[in-house]
Length: 243
Image 1: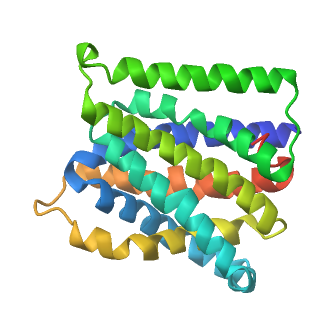
Image 2: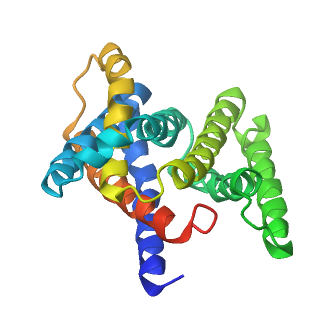
């Protein structure tokens, strides 16, 4: 990887790592659907003007079908799953379970795209999956203060990681060469449309606090809009398994 790729990867790790804190801050007052809907809606509003200014709207229209599917599998479903998990799990635990994303990403890229898995990568996958399973079992045990809610929340995080892993390979295969801003903005718009009705139906009866609104704003602008531009650029430069 080039120094630019490494810098983007570190920035993306920081932005996505912060997202779990922001979700934890806003989930209790907004609920899972409203939090996820506001996240993608705010990101779409931030990115669409940039797409228009850069003249990338025709690219978004030409590839609308694949971009829409990426919006569902890479934003709507995983954001909803992590927002649900934030109602139960600490931010740190959700972020650790999110580390299953590169495991599923590498596995799916190997099965689907033929990306090479050498001995060290294969060993890393085995160790990683054993660690994720062990963590879920340990944290959901009744004696550890877990139980069914913690188990369901943990499985939601793993399901989100599967979605992320699939969408990375899907984007690499069907959206290769499409400008990152078009993919990022189009996918957030697609996710916002998919979550619009559930967001309205589940809107909180009690107005959320200013702190929760700030958390949602940072979640949408930094941890989603900026982060996904970096993510799709990395997919374009180094491929899904390395990303």
